[in-house]
Image (cartoon, rainbow, N blue to C red; front, side, top):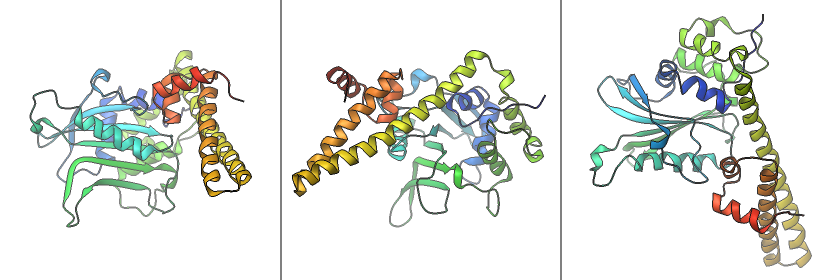
Length: 305
C-alpha cells in the first residue's frame, strides 16, 4: 500500500514528532540553529509545560527544550510553527518572557541561560529573496549579545540549490517543505538519512488513531477559520472606515471612521470565532486580544450586525 503522509507543519504532528523523540529534535536543531562552530548539542531535556510562562493572548509554543552542548554549556530553545499576524512581535515577546522567567526570587543573574526562539513560517513576510533570518542584539561596533536570539525561516522561499547549508539542514527543510498530504513517493535522499526516515515513518497516517486524526484536522480548521476571518475583518474595517470618513468629508472623520470600522470588525471577528466553537486560547492567538478583552466583546456584543 502506498503510504499516506500527514503534513509535519501541522502543530499537532510537529509536536508528536519533535515533542516525543529527543533524538530527532537533536538532529534537527544541530542542523538548523546558527550555533557557534565548536558547539554541538549532545543532549536535551523537555521543559515541563507548567515551567513555561503562560502569557495571555501571546504564548503559543509547540516545543520548549533545554539543550546541553559538548562544552557543558546549556541554553533553551523555544520552537513554534507560525501562522498568525504579528508573529515577529509575538516571537520576541515569548522568547524574552522565557528568558526572564528562568529566575526565581533571590537567584543571581548567572543562573540565566541564553534562549533561542526558532519559528518555521509557512508564509512570506519580506519581499527580499532571503529566507533564513537570524536576529540578535548588536551594537554599532558589531559587538553582540547572545542571550536572546530569534531564528525565523520562511519555508516557501527555501530552495535546496546553491545554498551554503549543511547537507542535513537542507534535508530537514525539504522534509518540511515537500512532505504533505499529497505526497505519494519520497525522494531517496530523504530516506537515506536515518533521523529523517524515522520522522517520515511517524508521518504515516495509518499509525494514528481516529481521535488523533480528528485533532490533526481541527488544527487545520482553526488555521483556516482564523485566516478567513482575519481577511474579512481587514476588508470590512477598511470599507466601513473609508466610507464613513468620506461621508464626513474631513480628515478627522476619516480617521475616526476607520477606527470605528476596525473596532466593530474586530468585535465581529472575535464573536464569529466564538460562535464557530473555537477555544479561548485560539481566539486570542488569531485576534491578538487578551482573554479579558475577548470576554468583554462577547459579553457586550452577543451579536454583531
